[in-house]
Image (tube, rainbow, N blue to C red):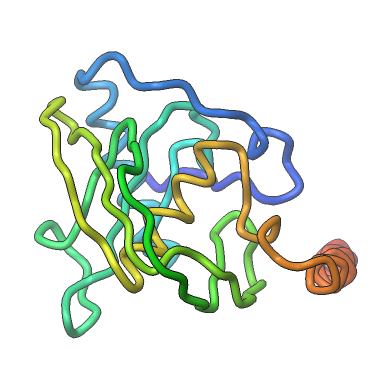
Amino acid sequence: MAVLDIVTYPNKILKQISKPVERFDSELHKLLDNMYETMIAKNGVGLAAIQVAVPIRALIIDIGDEEGKQGEKTKIEVINPEFLVWEGSQKDTEGCLSVPDYFDEVERYAKVKVKYFDRFGKEHITDAEGLLSVAFQHETDHLDGHLFVERLDYIKRKKFEKEWKKLLKQKRKK
């Protein structure tokens, strides 16, 4: 397995709409394994394939167990997700591996029901709420070419853009 490079904002790849997965083969399995290793190495709870420059509808989620420990028992591999139900509303602070070092409050659905396939093409339906609901929505946004910062209101979005430019300038000076 390998830790992959994560594509960061404002790379245009992140705006691509990912294509459905058609083959559940060893190539997909290797990608999922590498994505998981990358997500863990970067201290994330989710990673979409487009974030490692592979425009397919695949993502990984691992919010951990009750103590926050991540591993094989808590990992969810999601292929070709489709939301069946959205309910309620919640606001949580979100961050993104493709927008490093920036966090802001985003409004999302409180509960979702998602149909998806695992690496072997077996169908699953999951009811999610709380952080898991947020993770499904956040990562699926990536597959649709969107970042969480696009969900910020106008004033917060302008603040983000200003802070992001400042951060990029600081990184260039180093």
